[in-house]
Amino acid sequence: MLILFYFLLTIFSAFILWLGAKILDKAGLDKRWTFCLLIPVVNVFIIWVFAFSNWPNLKNNR
Image 1 (cartoon, rainbow, N blue to C red):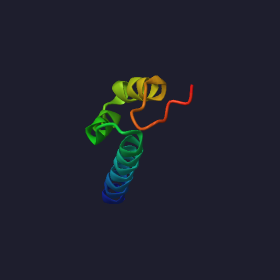
Image 2: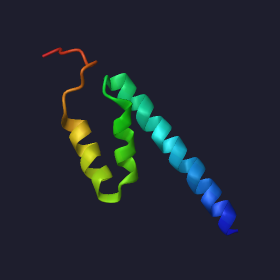
Image 3: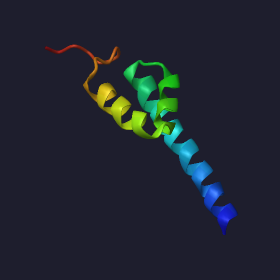
């Protein structure tokens, strides 16, 4: 049972990192920032910084 837990945890973590890399790629940022999602307190802070920062690929319509 414990082996199944760690297997599913590994699959879930890889999936989250893949999704994060796809989002950062579309935003025009470096994909290596997704590794910050693995650090417990830093991940919340990085998501907030990313949400309110300027995205290089976003067209400036203002």
